[in-house]
Amino acid sequence: MEKDNDNIHQHRLTVLQNHLQALGLHALLVPSSDPHLSEYLPEHWQGRAWLSGFTGSMGTLVVTQTQAALFADSRYWSQAEQELRGTGVTLIKITSGGASDYIRWLAEQLAPGQIAAVDGRVVSISSAEQLIEALHARGAVLRTDLDVLGEIWADRPPLPKSMVFEHSPPYADAPRAVKLFSVRQALAHLQTDHHLICSLDDIAWLLNLRGSDISFNPLFLAHLLLTPTEIILFVEPSKVPSALQAQLSVDQVRIAPYEGVASALAALPRETRLMLDTKRCTMALYQRIPDGVTVVRANNPTTLLKSQKTPAELAQWRHTMELDGAALCEFYAAFEDLLKQSSGHAPITELTVDTMLERARALQKDYVGPSFSTIAGFNANGAMPHYRATLQSHATIEGNGLLLIDSGGQYLGGTTDITRVWPIGEVSDAQRRDYTLVLKGMMALSRTRFPVGTLSPMLDAIARAPLWEAGLDYGHGTGHGVGYFLNVHEGPQSFSKTLAQEHMAMRAGMVTSIEPGVYRPGLWGIRIENLVAAVPDPTASSAGFGEFLSFETLTLCPIDTTCIDRSLMREDEIQWLNDYHAEVRARLQKKLSGAALQWLLSRTEPW
Image (cartoon, rainbow, N blue to C red):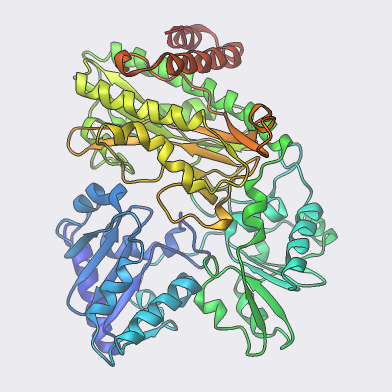
């Protein structure tokens, strides 16, 4: 029997700890993942949130027989402190580079001979191997064959069953057959003839298919196995219309039951050479591979292929940015008018922002839905990078301060992600200083030229330099790859402090966010974000030092200038901002009228 909401998570932890003792287990690891190691999860796999109450998209829970600890990075510290209060779960703050801290902590809790468990269906091969090695050094054991959480989760939601649909031309540029040929070429270089893909965005991209099994991501639950003669798509057959199944069969794609992937791996002939990505395939599937099969470990070739958008896809994306920019102008014009008329009416809250933004985007052609939960944080709430207003906890937008709005949309022709900060009432000098330094960092990276193949983490410091000079920094990465009507977060590129690796090299066609920030807990948060595309830079390349890339800014929305401390801006930075606003005005004014057009014109005046 469940307790009241105040004690529900504490009760669930107690039930779990008792169950661990009954099973002879000494600890359970509950990661934030599913059998596809996704960032956003179907409710069926949100065990960490169900157990602990922490709803952030990233975080690892470890439960022993006597204690529970949640490991989260700085993006989630404030949120976790609030959501874990009274649950009995201790927050352990990890810093940049501390993603595997939970492994060391777990090993330290165990004595020789003791047993920890993790559901092998939701942990990657590489993570499981790190766990096994760390526990072995302590004389402890890891079991991956148990679904401990499922045994106590009586009302666990079922798996989603939304229909699969085709992403068709003109939005899908390359046919399935062309993409499959490219992947087979990559396999040939590795001297392999089979390839297992578990990551949902890779499967969706490769087959030009989309779905809605996961909130904000147009994906469907599936595994895929390429063999020399066919492609087996393991998906619930009832989710794929018969006409689409017939179209897939033309490209040698055969539908098999979703749960059949394990048996198919177990039946592989001994002479098979199977390529898989150990960071994107689970331990449970790996353990079904027969002895004698040669496993070739490498990054999914689809990850790099899908990151390099074609000219046709970028053309669609530019059009999508005009649609999204027009929606944002409609929203901001209406929202500012609402603020002016708020006296004597219902209070305007952070929830109002979410509702009005969704309404404005929904009117645009090709709009499918939001690409993530809108972050609308006023003053102190803006200092939590992954804050989300709820009915139970949100702020009224009134008085003086800064309103941070981070939102995005899924369109048939691209995915958007944008952050702007707007003044409410009076703004302090300290706020102007922070705002200006963040803007300078965003502009610095947006204007950068660099050689083709530069490792993306090397570019991170360019955006941080203006902030570092003032003794400021931020805990999250500067930018993430963005999918083409796919995940709002994708790789392999990343502007961050992470250790640079060869596969993270920048190439033409990659779309990435640039989003530096400053966060002052309890006061305000500032983040300014545009999406940019890496494009060939003929001017730099003509200097005789090889091919260079530069960034084309895709996002079209005014940047507030009233928060800028002009004394901190150089003339070339002011010129960049004026040029950007001229482009925004020229591209969006044809799509607007009335108050939205007037708002655009006033916000894009030369400064």
